[in-house]
Image (cartoon, rainbow, N blue to C red):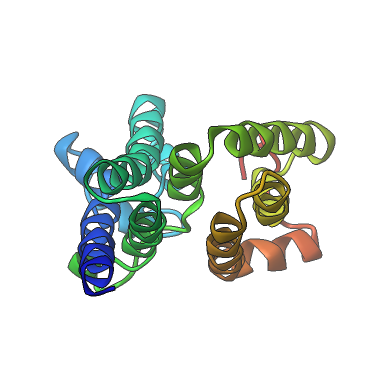
Length: 199
């Protein structure tokens, strides 16, 4: 029991450190584009990096934010076990949302959510992607597509026989929805920009 608690704590810390790497801030700063927190929404994620006009940096930010979640889970699984892998996924997600280096003001979490999901259960990640693309094709709102896909993820994991993972992703989904409350408000008011439409 004690060794499990220790390994889980180590996994949580490793996940948090990985998750708290602010790729959007680092990449835009290295490219000489200044502090990404001072433009657009003030967010450090790929969507706000895209507002700099640099699509390559936005793609790199998306990939970095995704892979840090995947890496944390795979590392914990390799050195410990599946329980530690889930804990590391939680740590990575919390690190992205609340990085200590940035005064606990991080991103909205979708890319890291997907990265963690890929490492936890790739089949669920494929279904997530399918739901996102279907919703995007129908409604043309990136935020709405992500919110619906996240909402479906715990159900998908449970149906795949992964109740512990489903519980974790129920918590992550609640946090994603909380971080997207401004987007939800704009969706309700009809002011959320659609995919491919600049605002």
